[in-house]
Length: 314
Image (cartoon, rainbow, N blue to C red):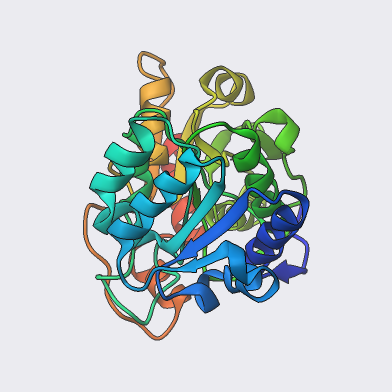
C-alpha cells in the first residue's frame, strides 16, 4: 500500500468545506482573530459577510462571543492558530463553551511545527492535550484532506463543543480514508504483521513511508490512522492491533497528553511493548522549513522505523 502523489492544502480544503456548510445551513457563522486569510474563514467572509465576525486579536472575547451566538441558535466556527485557541482563550473555552456544552466549533490552524517560521510562541505542541482534558469536548485531528472535510461534517453533527486541528502544510490523500458516518473511528490504512504504528495528522504519511522503508528488512508494519483523539475508540483500536508484537505511536505533538498518552491509557495492563514518536516535552523554535523541524525533533519516517525495530527486538 503506497501513498498517492496527489496532495492538497488542508487549510484550503477546510475553508471550502466550511463555505459549503454555510451554504447549506444559515445557522453557520464564522469568527476569526485577524487571521482569516490563513485559517481560510475568509471564504465565508467573501460570500456571507453578514455571517462573518472579525474579532481582532482578542481571542478570549472571540470565544465568549461565539458562545453567546450559540445561545441564539447559531453554529459558530471560531478560528485562530491552534496555540491561541487552546492557550490564550483557555478559560473561555472551558467556562463558556465546554461547561455549558455550547454548540461551538473551535478550529485550531497551523498546529505543531507547520508554522515553522514564527517559532515557539506560535507552534502549538500542547493543544490536543489541553482540549482532550476538557470535559464535553470532541477532538478531531484529520489525517488527510478528505478527513478535513469529514471533520467539518462531523462537527456539525455533534451537538456540543468540537475542536478541529488543522495543519498548515500540504497533506497527501491516504490510500484509505475513514468516513464521517463511522464517527472517525480508527481505520486500518495498511496491513502488516509485526508492529502496529498508530498515528494521526501528517504522521500517518510518515508511518506509511516507514512501512515501505522496513519492507526490505523483513519487518512488517501495520499502519492505523486515529483521527478522533476524543472520543477515543479504545475497543476498535484493540481489535486493529491484534496479532502484532508491539505498538509505536506517532504524532506531531508533545508525548505528554496526546495520542501516545491516550494509547497508553487504553492499553494499560496489556503486555504489548510500546514506543512513542513525538516531541519530548519541549518547545519548538524557528526554522527555514517544516521538514527541518520534523527532522530536528525526531518526527520522521526514519524515527518511526527506529522505534519499530526496538519494539520488534531488531
